Image (cartoon, rainbow, N blue to C red; front, side, top):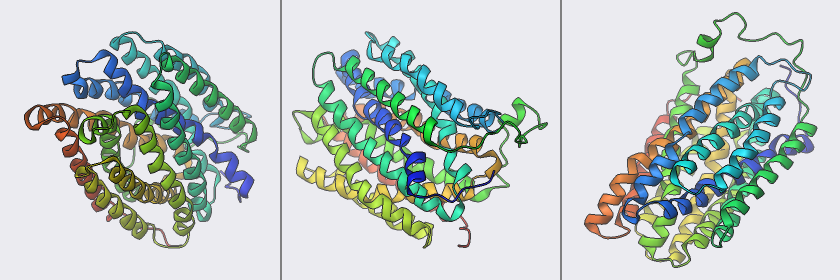
Length: 414
């Protein structure tokens, strides 16, 4: 595919849907699920219940992204390869969101969340392939910077809005309806304004290579740099979802915050707003300097501040650490995305970016499952809140392992 020379308006159009996606997942994973668990789970088993809920559907959603990504690589449409999936995925996900907001028992909550995971990722999988599809390699750092601006803004707004809304009666349904409307509006903007070439006469990159077998065949030995980036991102996200999954409980029991729903939203907002300020300059620098060195610096900053959270004693200290952590996370996420766009196989970006998404979805399953029961056990043995402090130390371990993995990546010459 002929990549385009992007201007500011083009970067805006290709990136703006990330705001809605990030608002969607930030509100659901950061606030909604944790608050819903408190309604259905015994207090002494809330970590275990959250682990089951967060893991449900996450692996299925990863497989959906690979399948839909592969199909979109070869899809023929006058609207392009990716936009039809973005349209229908968001539209169908609307019904799953509303069903989740109406859940009145834990089983219904699990199955509706699985549906949201699947249908949202039918849209998200092809959408995330647009940057490697359409943006020239020398501009992919800048494209990642624009993406990060909208992503972090959505991650800040989603939990903050959800925190205020979920603190009152009927907030669950209202939140899901708002998210559904927001997703549809931003989806329509993307479908209308992104200039994706028609794929009607395009030769399919995987034609004749074995159908379903080809769909799940990945030449990872052929692309070792992509593989190490994948491993690194998976480890970093293990830390991210460990922290995010127990953040509300950490504030409630480890720090002793009274209005913990609202303060969770404020803390996530402080992290992500700080990330906005580092994301854009990091993306610009990624087109000029070594991406690996930028990842070492930003990842090291994240690890240092994460260990501080394990020993924080009051909410002021937590907010300061959160802001510093956000600066590191904003820079790391932007540069890491630019790095994978440089190394993803171009003709099959949909399928390989679907595999890339497993570095996000598998940690959603494993992180709460690994930390869930041990945090309950430590809380029982050492006192309320101690388990969540240990979970913050585990975050640091994951970050260090992720930085070690990135050492194996060979950067392309500028």
